[in-house]
Length: 275
Ligand code: KIV
Image (cartoon, rainbow, N blue to C red; front, side, top):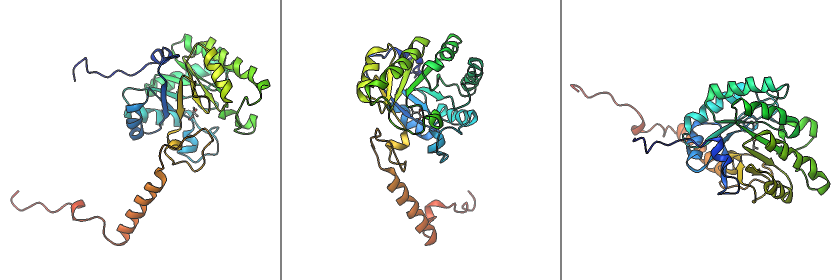
């Protein structure tokens, strides 16, 4: 490969520069093989803490640990080469103090090589985001529905469906922007509010249950592939892999029981004499 052919990863400043431009395409990934596929089409790969639910069958993202994020983040870095990889900071790894946030974010970046981290929360995280950004950690914000707060908010309900509820969510998006985040996820908020925030903040908004007006979109890969048993309203299913995976497993089980697998082509013959 010549130096000119060399493929460079997108960076947080590249994504930041896309405000108001071509939509930013993003999906989650937690494994090397899916990262390889996602990388071909996406600008940004999010190693989300939704991996707790998707990979580990947890009820919420609350029990997810920093070690889980680092392990899957490493796999995604190995599988991808072009997209910006953003790794979620899990619950309990950044809220106690800005120093705690920096030490853990630095660990994630050093041990995975990812290009940025994501934290949930608006105004309450602004000081921490500014502290991280000043110290070389690119930060993606996350406002609207923040699933790590599920035990405090009580349900995964959409936010801002009454206009009276808009100001705090708008203030959150503004605070994250002013603190220096390079982009912000807007999750499960009323469409006109997501549109309005997008028009009013200077950084790209990445919608998930937001608005088509957002500067980009993100979905959980397994949700859009039809592998998740239950999905929120904002998920469009682009595939239905569950039945084809089940058919493959059923075919394998039937072949093994019928001694039809392995066939002659799948076993090793003895070496021919003299070779
Ligand atoms: O963890 C995750 O997958 C996320 C997306 C929902 C944005 O944070």
